[in-house]
Image (tube, helix red, strand yellow):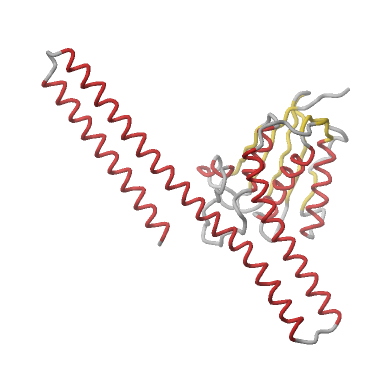
Length: 301
């Protein structure tokens, strides 16, 4: 209901802006016809009405953009609230159970394991929000050194397997990666970008995961990291929007995947600060996706 109301409001402002622009154009034409012999008034009228039309167009664009941005922020707040509330509720339930009932040692250890898992989820959500704020504000190249990008990818892949309980068949390298690829950059930021890319593929791959990671060097100056999954896929019109802050692909009716809508925004921000680019490819819904980041390479013989 709220989305429908917001869409109607946007349509109203677009319609009203179009009508006002049309009215201004009609007045401008009338002015020209009535004063075509008076050069001074004619020029003044054209400039004046041109400014009005430009102002109306810009105002309408600004209003629509702000309404869409507010809608994305509302979705982000709802998602983050859910991501915080769910594990907190779970932890509270386990603590109440431990306080009110006697449980055996095996069940107590299981409760501790589940609570630790929920705290990891809470910490991950908080870190995503903080990292998104940090990458927006940071512009200077701090703590840049030569880093082994191959090692970062390998470590991130092994950690993603461990955290999500994935086998080497579910998440693996497509071919043996190069042993040493040198980049100039911040190792921690690059590790964050790779981890977010892998987590995104895992999150959107469904229960039957098959995620393939490749490191490519098309030339001496460039390195590509490609992450291919067999997941839900992305509609063509959404491919450029998915890297925007707070943006999440609309649900296809099978259920919205949990998340804050910040992961891919963080990936693109970090990659761009390192002089590269991030993009996605997909054949559409249910066809899987391929995410690629391109980075400049420091070549070593």
